[in-house]
Length: 255
Image (cartoon, rainbow, N blue to C red; front, top):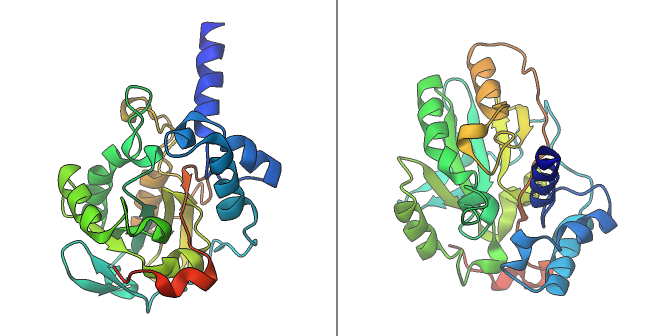
């Protein structure tokens, strides 16, 4: 019984604001969970999730599709501007949509470590396997606050990003090109810039030590070895990417 309760609690934690919903009702219900309420009230969160998540058109990037943002140029926290195409290495490119403000990224106190504590491991593996890697922050609606470029620089330092590129996606152009939904949301491309894996990093946002399914790591290894990806799609989970309305996009900051 105790194990069942723990399992149910973990499931409820994952079913939070910004998880990719099957229906509008499911998304609004997800928004009522604790990880979203830390940012906003329950009603505000539900409205935000409905706007950013549930009403999105089904135009998501599919396995085998070519990276549609190769010519997009983004600013890294180092001050360097980089084309997405330039990130690629011998065996491909890995992009993860992330941010400064989501508990699925940085954790939720004692309840969850978040996935961010795996970023340096991913960077090390990507370097070893000759796969280009970068994080992308597309939270344009928070660009004047916690997800500002200056705060991205600070966040990368405070969290000890080890050689990780952390790029600001002005007006969420790259996120829109991919139809990315959550932070985190993983996209792995091969050397021909074709999508081979998308979804989550692994199966346990709460604890790095308790991961049983290393989906991204497995996909990266298979890609580098020239093998077919065993599990090319998994369920991405996290907070919704905070977009701005199209009519307000021209008021956004470039970085």
